[in-house]
Image 1 (cartoon, rainbow, N blue to C red):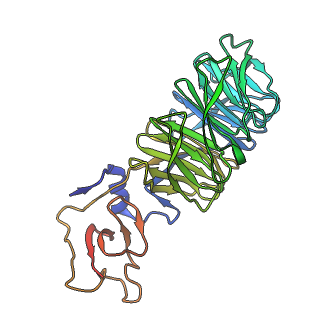
Image 2: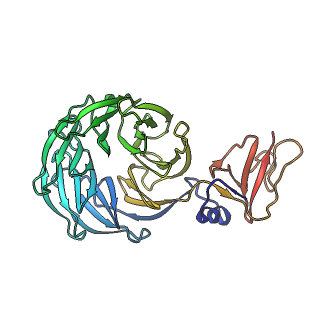
Image 3: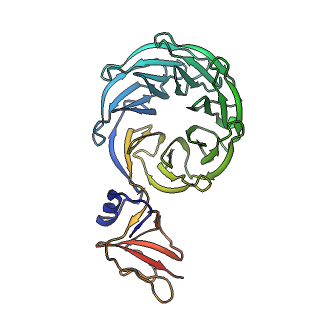
Length: 384
């Protein structure tokens, strides 16, 4: 019998061996380092575009996710913090050097074709048709026309109260992660020449990044954790849930009922947000250098930036557990279930326990669990 959704890969993982203690339902597929300190990533087609603070834009082929390789690069004059790709152009938020527009029509030979300075420090970018919305630190949101990529020009701006660090665009709204005091700012860009703030949500710590999917915004709130915000009414964003993280939430992406958080001290964190009022962690993987700062999702793969180790590509198996066919269901008459091979003082010590969502359990309470042993995955009823 199958419980929740499950992929063949997860079933295989459960049956053939113990997963590393620093991972759950996620496996590392491939890795490609960059020369400097990687800061942001965007994925389009068979390429990942990495903003490297000291080495500009790096173009990495991910046609074979197990063997990603750099195929081209374009240095930039500033510090490349973020990147957004559309229509054959990579738009790089280049710190004190503003927005740099780079043609990636030939990925092996990316070349800058235009730029537009911004008043402060460009930290992130998002494409809105023929415009790019730039989070410009202390100068708020800047709206830049790239209708002529060789001559990008600012057409409007919206001052904000905090430090604009991240931005996402959906329809005619820009959602800005506005740092320490700004929280989440919702800005109408229906008239790009006159962007205007229409809604605001106050964060707990420092809003670093934001992703929007459907009627929900997901905010990486640095030391304040991970927040789910309803933006069904953009004028009145409302918090639906908050999930505290022991690390620092730097980046966030959302797709298909899942939210992916780049946790600076603990790597990739995966949350089910099918019930937005109750996010549940269903997977994680500790990145190579423990410095995850950005994340993007494309198809079956999750692309994580670790500032020290570059681009890391992961696959999330999907939550759920499948029993071994004809496995016995154990239900003792009284007292806690004792798994064979475990001592009375250390129940379950020689096995790995999962709940029906595929989450590893250390101290199971009463309920139904799944025990992975060398030869089978067995459903166990714990009674206390």
